[in-house]
Image (cartoon, rainbow, N blue to C red; front, side):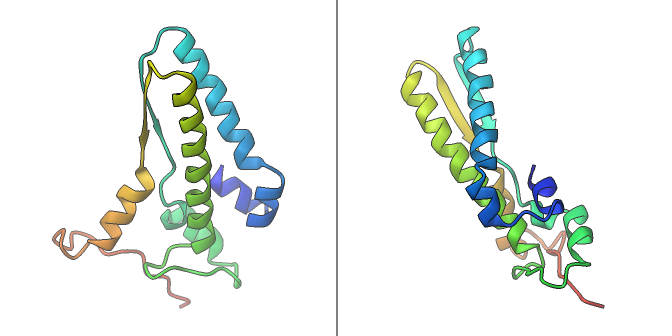
Length: 136
């Protein structure tokens, strides 16, 4: 979803205004309710990772002169969108936990895990270096 919304040139404001993220999270909640109603008692739901760091996102945005990049060279708007999506998702999971206190619903935070790797890449042995955007 992250890439397609931005590839279709939707701004963050449009995405929020049109409830695109809320609609996706609601669909996820409905699917989870079906799983729970069929007997699931332990569920893990993963958020989205840093989409702005994927090579496809970097390639698509390289032609966009207005794109902004974070300190690692990742597309900032894409990552901000992912963060927003994850916040809405976590709120939705909170509602599900309240409705189903007997079910263990765990949020898998891929965004923070990936961010931690970027933030600590030097202490991880410099096995890779973060993406560095270059206009060359």
